[in-house]
Amino acid sequence: MSAAGVDVSHVRTDTRHPTGLLVKSPDSATGTRVHYYRTGSAASALGPELLDEEPLRSAALLHLTGITPALSASCRALVTKALTGSVDARPHAVSFDVNHRPALWPDGTAATVLRRLADRADIVLVGLDEAQGLWGEDLTVTDVRHLLPHPRILVVKDGARAATAVTDHGVCTVPALRTAVVEPVGAGDAFAAGFLAGLLRSLTTAQALRLGHITAVSALRVTGDHGPLPAADRVERLLALPDPEWEALGRAPERTPPGTGYTPGGAAP
View 1: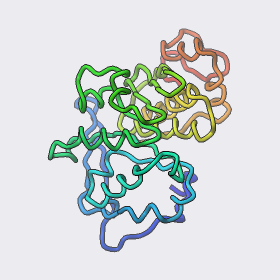
View 2: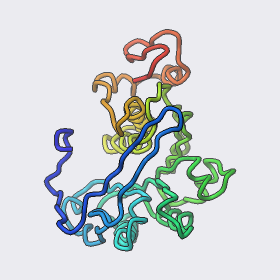
View 3: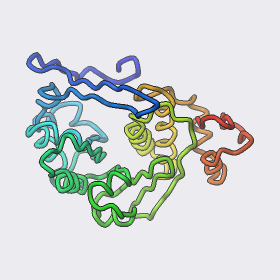
View 4: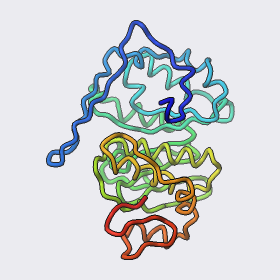
């Protein structure tokens, strides 16, 4: 993580609990199987006191997912406290990726708890199919907004088709990039990372959605959970493309748009 540029100076070692583990078993015939070893992990021992420590006190953005509140009572208290109170009174923005994992919610409370938590966040990300599985199989993006009216930004991801952001300024839909999928697990988290990075860079909503798609593609093209991004100058050219040229990348054009590095018949960068 340090080699990737992540500040790990605040990482702590918990001598009483093991590190959680995730193992992926990619299989082209049956799909990827993911094995989780979370029980009793160091992460499950986290609690609300974490919010009073650095680097959270000076953070610009705190990112949470629906996995954390399902890990333990203390983890749920952590997420609940982070999302408590007025949005204006928070020291930082809070984003929440619904990230529903049915195996973590055997008591059937996921739909109620995740909706309540998500509606308290500043920024929410959810897959359309995920929302339909939780709150109603015929939901549209508009319906999801009605269920989650309070976040200032709601992003609904519609698989390989598009992602839509709903804000006070309107609705913005950006088509996904076409790519050859090597392994899909991790693409949702990669999209969230790209989109949130775009917001922190003060990109427009449409550009932040584009950066989410670009980052998701980097994960889809490798067996790991994240892959190499295009060179920075190529990313900037992709972000600056006129809408028709961006949309053409999702339709697999027969010729390469100038400066984008798109490979016909292969994967968009």
